[in-house]
Amino acid sequence: MRRTAASLLLLAAALLAACATYQLEKRLDPVSKDFLSKVRYLITREERRTFVNLPEPERPKFIDEFWKKRDPDSETTENEFKIEYFQRIDEANHLFSEGQEPGWLQDRGRIYILLGPPSEREAFPRGVTFYGKPTEIWYYNFFPIVFIDDAWSGNYRLDPDSAVQLGMIMRAQMEWKPQVEVDKKVLHCEMSVDRSGPDQVRVRIGVPYKKIWMSSDGKDLRTTLTVALEVLDAAGAKIGDYQNDYPISLTEARMEEIVDEEFVIEFSLALKTGASMLNLTLTNAADGGKVFKRTRLAP
Image 1 (cartoon, rainbow, N blue to C red):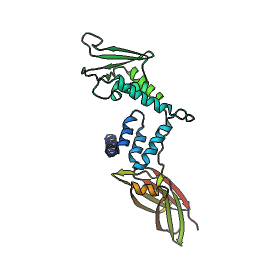
Image 2 (image 1 turned 120 degrees about the horizontal axis):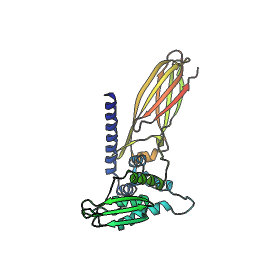
Image 3 (image 1 turned 90 degrees about the vertical axis):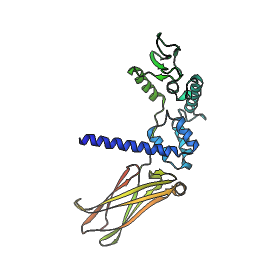
Image 4 (image 1 turned 90 degrees about the horizontal axis):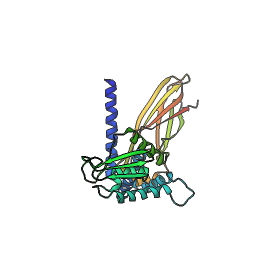
């Protein structure tokens, strides 16, 4: 029962995250929407999440970096991968124009873009058998991939009956899509502690804004940083603690102005006799990122 409940909670969290991403995508500017649409076969889930949460002025830089990561030869002036990708989209639109959707969005177009032209293509407009439906069989070496037009509408769907075919498709897709390292804002901070009295210290925590992942809420960027501090004695036993939440809410314009600055957290902390060390756990609510710091207290 507990395992089932945990699974349901994870599923609910995933659905909420997907819904939030969808809502953010609906509010994107036309250029950003077009980019996400065109790279749907390439972009990773993490890249998509990063992109939709970026302030609008930072998205052109993301798009430029997106293609640079996939450039097979940075020494040339052209990005050969990007050129071929868009060529395949154009070819798919031309080859599969009879369907109700643009050719590149149909199953045949998707496979054509990911795998390239088949080595052989057989078309059966009246079906393979007398009572059959329009069928195409594509061959990549000796692997056949079958498409069927169930509704006689020009929209051919990929026939999923053969696990071997689908396995080959997935392997080929991963081979053609360049493996890229996803940039992620890794939470980082610096902590300093100064004695303000025999039994009191002043704690300062500086967090670079560029290292803070924030959720987009309309035109605002929001998150909450949680500070959890343990006070330990010389033997490592806990003798005190401190915890507090520090919300952050900024407009995209303001974030652009202060992106190279720090979000500063300062507070005074009363110490018990024997306090020797502070353990800090800083948590970002937006992505669950954590950073840990340990500082010895001056006598």
